[in-house]
Amino acid sequence: MEYREINLFEGISEADLARMITCFGAKIKRLREGEVVCDYSDTGDDVGVMLEGSASMIRTDENGEVAVMELFSDGDIFGEVLAFSNAAGDSVKVVAESDCKVMFIKYGQITKRCENACEHHSRLVSNMFGLIARKTLSLSQRIEILSKKTTREKLMYYFNILAKKHGREFDLPMSVTRLAEYICADRSAMTRELSRMQADGLVEINKKRIKLKKTF
Amino acid sequence: MEYREINLFEGISEADLARMITCFGAKIKRLREGEVVCDYSDTGDDVGVMLEGSASMIRTDENGEVAVMELFSDGDIFGEVLAFSNAAGDSVKVVAESDCKVMFIKYGQITKRCENACEHHSRLVSNMFGLIARKTLSLSQRIEILSKKTTREKLMYYFNILAKKHGREFDLPMSVTRLAEYICADRSAMTRELSRMQADGLVEINKKRIKLKKTF
DNA sequence: ATAATTATGTTGCATTTGCAACATTTTGAG
DNA sequence: CTCAAAATGTTGCAAATGCAACATAATTAT
Image (tube, rainbow over all chains, first blue to last red; front, side, top):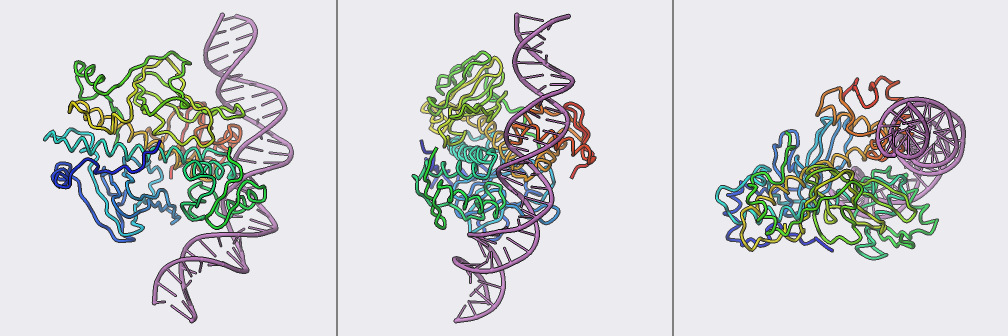
């Protein structure tokens, strides 16, 4: 079962779109690479949807340590309501990785009823449900990976998810450095483990090309 | 900002409820403690909502190892679409922890338009959006915790989330054993770390009562 | 083209952690 | 109440991992 290809505006005509956007109180912003899409120290309860381009959610703690928390591309949905509880009070921002287009909707507008009983309203909410369901799935997936005890298990589990999608041989969808961040492992320790896995005949690695020798 | 108290049926009268449930193709099941709520080897794309009671999602791998993946109680939403990709092909089931009442809705019914243009339909979707947003938040939160490198950091981050909600002194909302599962640490190693943290004057622990001596 | 920046790969070492094997306490069922 | 089962606490030890300090390759900017 595949739930990709979810389009936020599916089933909504171009003509209705403008009207709907007003009714929803939605705002569309265009941002250049490097610009701050939103800053969680001052945003209210806006929900953002990436329409074009990509962005990353970045935390900076009191020591100036920087960490990439999440990456967003087409169709990804984000917002304070969906994010986390910033228990440490760190600075958290979403920064454009490339030029991009983002739609912002007030969270309250989604859950509250449209006074105009606008039919597109409900359509958009349905579509947004699809987007957030996809996000939930990818978050659950990452938790599954992080819940493995060893780096090897984390990698194998992740590789198996990719293999399920693309077959036994596939390309990593991110850089090695990002992969280490994704599985929350030290980059050098992860590289070491990758070498061992290759030595043990579990995988064959060639740059970003991964060939799984054993699936479970 | 607090988004608790989300009720799936908020804004829907008792009278409309029955009609709506038909229109939605929703099914309400009652289960006794220990019964299987659903089995991911045969469920389709149903989305479940816990109306009463609690349940846990349990994975059993080929070695018979059992792991609790998620816990659900009132208002929690779950389903294969929202769950993970079972890359290892393990057996995954949701089991009732207590007698409970669960509503199942076909995923397709949520994202597809209601032919009857039933107004409650959109209301329910909005409400479900609230439920899934809450789930997303708690998943993000757990990822934040799991992304910390040491057990101490994981615990401190989690304690700070709790402190933000309940103040510097609070009770753990789960048993120590469950806490270890939640942060994906070995129980005995976690207990050892808790002792050290107490020795280092970071916290005071008394059964489930935690008193944070230092917040960050 | 060249320099600068970023990504990648390797290794020693100290720390953290999982694991196993216990003792002890608490809880729950009958 | 009594007993069994589950939860909790402790410790030694081996394995896994983070960290630092590198070298080298690849990419990007000027």
